[in-house]
Image (cartoon, rainbow, N blue to C red; front, side, top):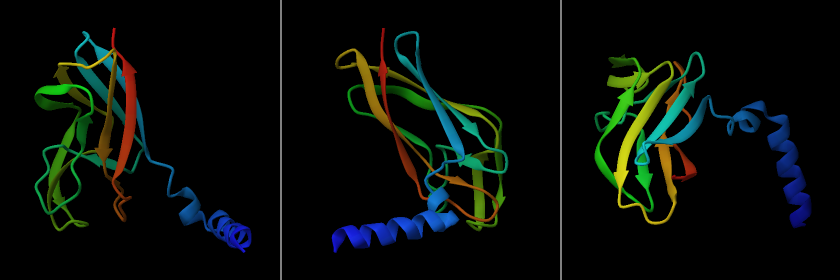
Length: 143
């Protein structure tokens, strides 16, 4: 019975384009370490979509954030890219977002081991809908 239910569910998801594509993020990421203590997360934002600033007012979209599992963040998270701050109809408030590529930069210290581990949390929306917040896990060798 379990196999039969799983098969029916799989066919339903495969035949439903909305569900089948919901796991495809419109944001692609590249992770790198610079100078041995600075994490760079480059977000390549698909045309028509956006990703939200870390410095987002509460009550709106989930802000982008970096969580380090085996190091301590040093200083504030920096955002390198063209930020747009304006009233957003989806959230009915002013929000700060990136419509183009953006790089999030976080210095760190007290690394345990030689691989930086953690995750990047973000939320993306177009002008009609938002995808659920997502965590992107990373493990990056530090030289």
